[in-house]
Length: 446
Ligand SMILES: [Zn+2]
Ligand SMILES: [Zn+2]
Image (cartoon, rainbow, N blue to C red):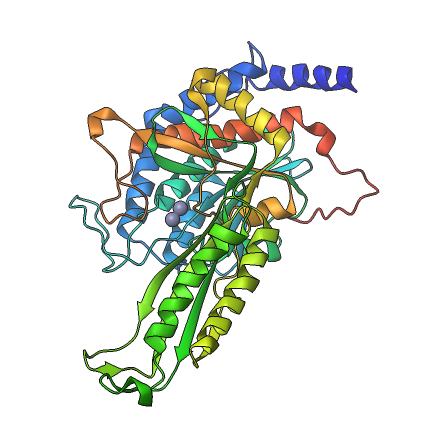
């Protein structure tokens, strides 16, 4: 087995020299598998790939579209795939696109980008500012799409050298819309053995990457409660049932779920970010609305929080003679699972990124309380998610994602494209044992 694998690597590398249309000086073969990542980076940094990616990113940035409304973004992606002669399926998950490069045979490895923007007004004054009022690519998903297309371009140029199939997953609605879930339901992971994804990071230097094995991003859920009492004159509280006081006690009690009920070594968050009730100084309102989010690193902890949030809200409200209803938005914003990186893929990532950037540029990262719907893919198959550095002293501090001042360092695009491509190429070379046996169910229609 070992020997066969090594032999096939040699054979593969010996054909990975084939001249590419764009990249004829790039022989990916001669020095072995560890040279592939650097060579792919060289290809991605060539002006004809880099400038093209920058152009695509800016075009998408000017026309941000919200979750499940990425119709023009999806159209642009398909137009570029058509130009490259890459086959794809569409629509999956409303606006999603799934492309295929390689043999159309197993193993299949997926690389993923999200396409959606945020409902916020861009405050950056520049030539390619958002043209859609109240919408902005403030999380870098415009760059993610450009990088995945960049990976597609360099892989397509070496298609006949691929030892399997690379699946390009362009998904809608990452920002709380569970787009990944819809992509999976639409068959995006059919036959796929592993999936890789990345996110740009403003706090990590350019040409560096960071991640960790195991839990990386928290899982999250949202809730909203209506606490109803009986309105009345502020000077006659005994004739009213005060929902403001009830809601205030609810919020204080919710804080005890983390401080008193959760294991201190199992990080969790409950935050109430919305408190709406009353309009006048001298009126007790009829009802109050509160809402918030809860986060944890296991589904068990998330489900426990969900159950206790409901009990605390309804129980505390009744202590104050109010009635409460709680909505967890199961349909529109289902609980997003924690993002859990596969251990074997962590080793793969370290090797590939280390070969490309130098091992000192591949950093370990602490777990993050933010959440990422890439987690849905990881529930289904082995997956790996990492952060791609963008910070550069010459640009000054880059604002955090979801800031109206958010900016992308476009110099990061070739790194993202090359990492996508290299993770996929090397996966196909180094994980051939993942090929399903004929006995397993296998669908070969693409
Ligand atoms: Zn975001
Ligand atoms: Zn994002």
